[in-house]
Image (cartoon, rainbow, N blue to C red; front, side, top):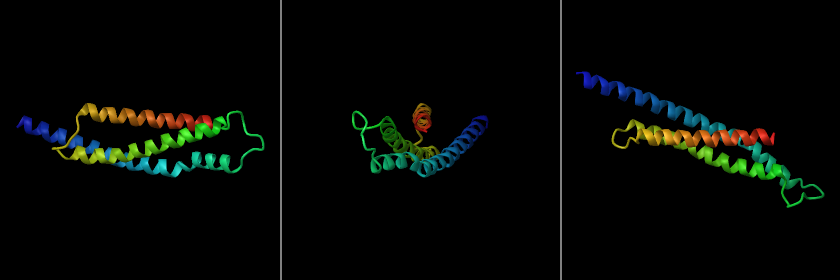
Length: 124
């Protein structure tokens, strides 16, 4: 009886975690998609409205950082979508990933999102 109760509690907790992953994954994905226009706007305006004298090396620091920001943005949007897929796997007992793998995925997502926010603040 006690073992069954423990399985039910852990199953319910995993279900709550899966719902959170799905909800936060979709919110993160759409925020990345909507707010991603800022670095794209910087790149487009920099490329289309070139100054009369190009900076040394051909690219300005703002342009390089905006391109890096776009690359990280695409990765971050992919990773947020991956959270929704992870939620599906957490709900299925047969393909449930290990706790270590879930923690590793969360760490990679956090580093990518903190990196993109840092670069965006630096560009601003």
